[in-house]
Image 1 (cartoon, rainbow, N blue to C red):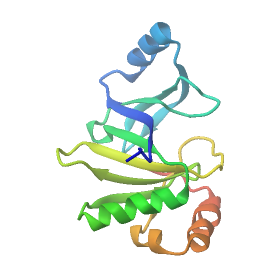
Image 2 (image 1 turned 120 degrees about the vertical axis):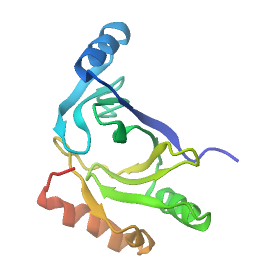
Image 3 (image 1 turned 180 degrees about the horizontal axis):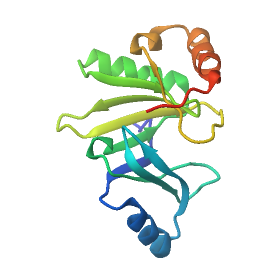
Image 4 (image 1 turned 30 degrees about the horizontal axis):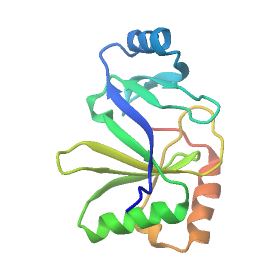
Length: 160
């Protein structure tokens, strides 16, 4: 079976995100794309090896809860299929977030590692945006889900 996902980014807890960002910038040329502080992440810095395509390929955050591996899917249909597959296997979905730039499912693997599966929506957003979406809404027709993603989120609420 061919993979339906591509590695998107990795979130790593860090005592000193700025120091690690400097290390990865100096050693590998990764560019800082976003930094700040949020309750769910603590202090954070996002770096990317392709900032014109991806806001983050590596993220450092002071909160250990933010540790995760993110997998990118190419379509809403694939994201919905992953959701259905998880549900069919009894895998709990922790949360679904509309980040405007992405629609993301969050869950854990059998050893408790955080996983994000996301679909890039094509929208652009400055800073961070996260609006909870009821996971059952992923079972709606695409038109209703797209309206939710593109219009409800357009108010620009930013929170963790």
